[in-house]
Image (cartoon, rainbow, N blue to C red):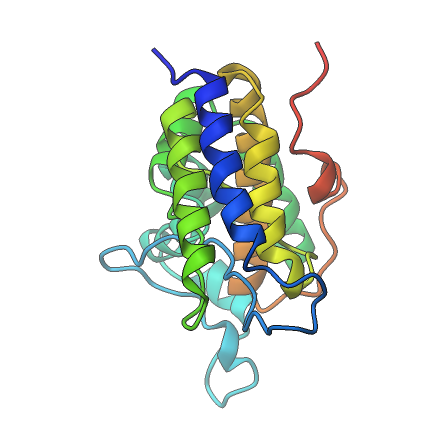
Length: 234
């Protein structure tokens, strides 16, 4: 049985109110430090990272060339660092080689849409919480911990959100606002929203691994981050 939404909302209201006493009224009174880090999966045993930072180094292939040519298990381990779905990783690795980065990103996007509810649940179970940088004041930690706990109590999995394109000074507020908004979803609708956020996160991580952060999102991409936190209309 889920936690009553009224109790969860009241609890989150309290911590948000406490946090608001510490948050600056403008972004100039107190620096927040670096942005909330993007979700990244924990290092997996034997994980092999795509050498995105070694582009141009003598004897080192470009990231996409490495991905196309590396043994299948190594490619799958690199993909699992983007999204912990073994079938998703096997599917993408099995369709190599890719002619360009955009083709790989589009294939990854389509493969994410094809995940079953059970596979989405498996991927969510492996997702870490977004971490705050060192030096973040304690009120923020208190509010976020309470908000995450309220979300997990209601839906049974961690809160996931893509912060791609969100200014760093707005990241903390965006996380708290979205948790509060999404707590109003029923569990089935929230699974749809969480799956969309997972898809976005997988794409962001893959672009990072390929050293292609500036590459445009695939044409299949959904709505902007701040428009996909509500449940779809019935």
